[in-house]
Image (cartoon, rainbow, N blue to C red; front, side):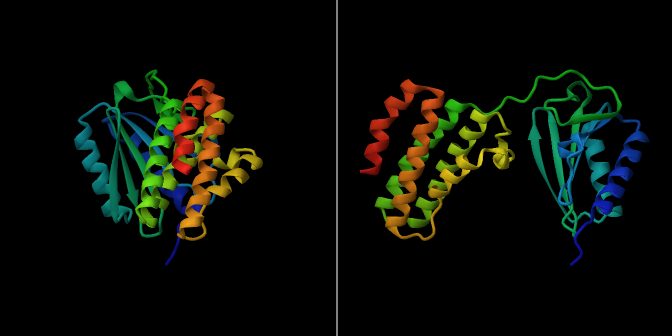
Length: 246
């Protein structure tokens, strides 16, 4: 099975840009994602945004048919964001093609990863970063379910909930260090000693002692991160979290 090359990706991107310039229903186009900042590597996908001045559903249908019929797309999925539709296409060579179909009034930068190629962009409210307090609250909720899953002998559910707790703690670390917190994008930018400490939250087996060991490590990290955000809340949560470990 052939895997796409950067040259394959760049050729298709050129086709998409040319098509956008020739589509009278498109008022602007932009690169988004890592490519907008010159950070694309061997495994980067295509991130492309269109500002739609015509009927968005019509444009969406036309571009979708074009990619299926002329560029080998085999599947797609949609991710809504505000009034935009991000249609994520997949080719057999594993190239991912993300195209945002955005009403012209909302076409503009919501993050630094936006480079206008042509047309006009309207000023937009930036994307709100994750809330540290919300991550803390989800973390202690996950912790409750880790505890109950272990006690019920539901090892796989315990591991699943432990993963949620771990991810919330890692997100808190990203927020504290000012690196991208969404979908693990900034984890590689964290100081090595921070991620090394998080290794203790991983499990090697589903044996009860191993689950309890990793759970204790995750709770300790959660309390450490909570202190950085809200010391009073950390004191409040210490007693129930310690009770979960008892």
